[in-house]
Length: 416
Ligand SMILES: [Zn+2]
Image 1 (tube, rainbow, N blue to C red):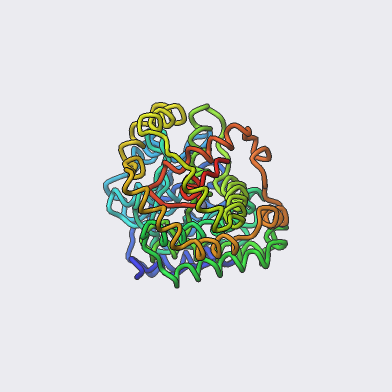
Image 2 (cartoon, protein in one colour; image 1 turned 90 degrees about the horizontal axis):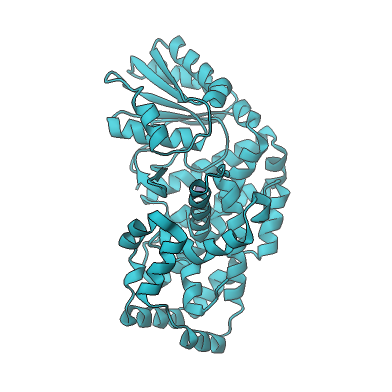
């Protein structure tokens, strides 16, 4: 069930004409356009001009120069420029601006409209706002936009790596869907067949047109944007991010947090997700190669670390963020009984698990799909060390209480 209609959703080279018409017909008397320096030049100024032309009083919030991370500092920067009169926010920007506008408008109890400036993430039509709060990447459920107007010329004018990142975010759905099916079998996670099918169609469309997406043609970028919109709508309809986020996203979130902790520049979300998808596809290859006899041996041979050594490991990986994670993790409470129950489920569903694993394209195929659209394929392409790659594999699964392929790997004794 859809929690709210996002209407209209426009992806075209006349999107801002439609925005102007929309604002003329809706009952708003003022709006606040949020952008940063780049997106103000690319779209914010034009969006504000269209809103004025439609008869609205317009205020503009242009974030100060410097890297824009969706954290407390930037949220306060926006909040202190809001006014009790604000009736409508318009986010003119990529994912980060949109998510902060989504969160702030929701907290102020007013709606927002999304004007994406790059086909870079699937969050524009979503309900969640991924924010970095106290250094931890978390998705705060907020609100979907009332409507979305994406101008194709603006999207095509975005830096090519942003388009490649949007494609990487879609490629990530290959392993998020597989992980979702694993979670359904082993952890009774809610599952919706029609949403899984819609997500798969979005992947298929982008894979088919990957060369056009890679060269940034208007047709390719529109197909990508529609796929990202559809993926976002799947989240709205499902009510949480499960259809679009599995182990590959947890790896990406882990890297993001580590970069932030080390004071290093951020890497585009979808670029990290694409690379992580290759790593998780490799894991599925290994799962697919385990025979039934091998399975019994592996399950019997795995001994889980004690709770205290596990907590020590989380402390060493997450530093000051560790306590919060430990408190919110169901999986740390695994007693012998729960471990036995999951082992039994793994044995019972092994045939299905192997079918799911075999249906995931091999790691080198996933890398090929990314390369075809000019997206990065390895951790070193992103400037991440082998150490950080291994740490993500080992510790990222603590970020979410979801049963992913990485959690399954721990039961199977696959360590990296
Ligand atoms: Zn994503």
